[in-house]
Structure formats: C-alpha cells, structure tokens
Image (cartoon, rainbow, N blue to C red; front, side, top):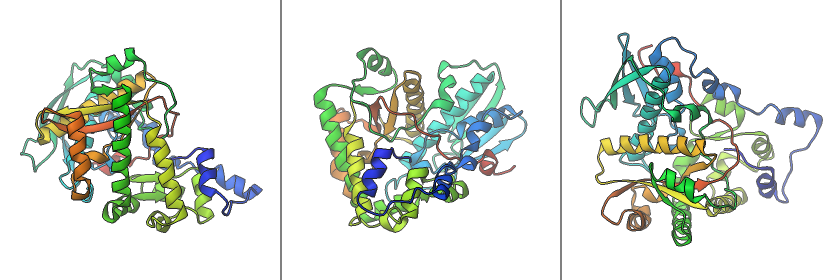
Length: 368
C-alpha cells in the first residue's frame, strides 16, 4: 500500500515530521522493495512452458496477498496445484471461500499465460474431491493467445480514491460480459454505504482487525523478507514509521491517532467510487469459487485494457457473525434470486500504483 503526499501529510498532522536532512533524503529515495518486486520482471523468462505460465500466474490477485498456492511439477508436461493450508484467513474467511477465489485467479492467469506461449492446458478441478488438490493441469502444444493476456503485467488492484468522473456507458456495457455493473446513482449510493459500513465492522471487530494487522509488512526490510500480506512501504510511509506515527502497535489500537486517520482515509477512498462490479453464482460450491476467481481475473484484465481501475471490496461478503447483517443486505441488493454474491469491487479511474510484492516462483514449487 502506498499513500499520496497529501494523505501522508494528513496522517502526520501536527505531530513529529521526519527531518528532511541529506541523510534522510537518501534514506527515503531507497525505499522501493526491489527484491519483493523481482518476480514481475522474471515473468516469462523460463524455458519450461509450465514454469513460464506459473511465473505469470503467481502475479494474480488474491486475498490479503497471502499467495496460498503450492505447485508440484509432474513429468515433463503436467502439474498439480495445491492450497498451502498454513495460509488462511480464519477470522474473515472461515470457509476458505475467498481463498478459493484467489486460487481461481491463479488458475486463469496460468491458462492465459500458457495460451500466450502457444500452449493449451487440459484442466481438471479438484481431482481428489473438494478437500484435496485444487487442480491438475496437463500442458500441450496448440494454445492460442487471448487478447486479455497482454495486460497481465499492467493489472493492479487499485486501493486509492477514484477520479470524480463516470464510467462511460459503452465501457460499462462491455464489462457486463464479465460481471454485473452498477453505475446508476441510487445503486452506487447504496453500495457506498454498504461497503463503508462493512469495512468498519472488519476494522473495528478485534479478531478480524488483528488478522489484518498480523499480516502487515512495515517498510522495505519486512516486505523484502516476507513479500506477502499487506505491504506498507514507500518513502512517505517509512518516514511515518521512523517518526513513530505508523507501527504495528498503532494499527492495533483503534483509539490511536494513526488508526483514526487511517479510518478517515478509507472513508474517503471507499466513497470516491463512481461504479461497482459484482460476481454472482447460482450455487456456492468449490467449483463456483474457482470459477468466480477466473471471472474476476478476466474482469480485472478487461478493466486494465480500458484504462479503468478495479478494487475488491468484498468485506460485506465475509461469513462471520458480526458481518451477518451486511452479508444479508449485500445479497438482497445484488442477488435477489437467491444466488451467492462471490465478489464485489469498486470501479473507476484511478492512479497508477506500484507492483505488489510476490514470493519467487521457486518458493512455491514443492518438489523442485
């Protein structure tokens, strides 16, 4: 996560400001976690077609950037995708539904990358049943590129306020091929209210808030050492860390000034939204979760191709007791026929943001 200068100054307020000395300036200009971002530059550099496809797949969006995938290579042309069960979100995602959606994003990006390299993928989901491996894939010659694959390296999840301009109707209509798009004033206003109230529940419920805090990586050194979770880096954020304004203790204390300023920032961000996208499914099986992830990834690539930004705001879809009223409201609004809402996201025009940290591919191969 990175912050604009305006947001950072708002956080600093009247408190201590990191001195702009020559040494401080030198420190701040070296805060990019290049090691954690290196997998983006290595994507596509492997000789094995499977590794090539996987090097792009691991850049897929996933909940809290847990990167919960593990891959076993088999023979010369196959692989099996597994869920690393040490990477879960038991407080906010007790049934691993959102984790499986992230796995679906991984699967779709792998298939798209394989096609771009001339490989087709024969895919079997849950070959051992719902509690076993996620997917088995066999690669073979004959794949064709999908135009969406050209946007993999530019895709982001934009956690910033969007510009005050509407999503053009022509683009919204095109995106209806991927998701339900909401641009009318009444729906947008209702969804702004819902997503904000749901975010407050997650942020102010102790066990769900702490789940996020435990996954925060503060500054370049932590991000490079553990390139997963919620990255808090960049020169301005690190200046706040040096000044003692931003820390794990501060983020764990809802009464702290830093926490309260963060709440204001999220309020601003969530309300700066001109449109929404939602994915629903008639049933709610593991295969539905993978399918929702695959559709979300394609939606994200499509928005990228249009110059639009997409940011998942699925807190209202989380399945724990404190969120139940908002879960019910989200389903009343978005799935009145009794379907399950799998994903909800903000849609609009946002700023360019940095690449998200990732573990190297070699760290995700379990028989390398």
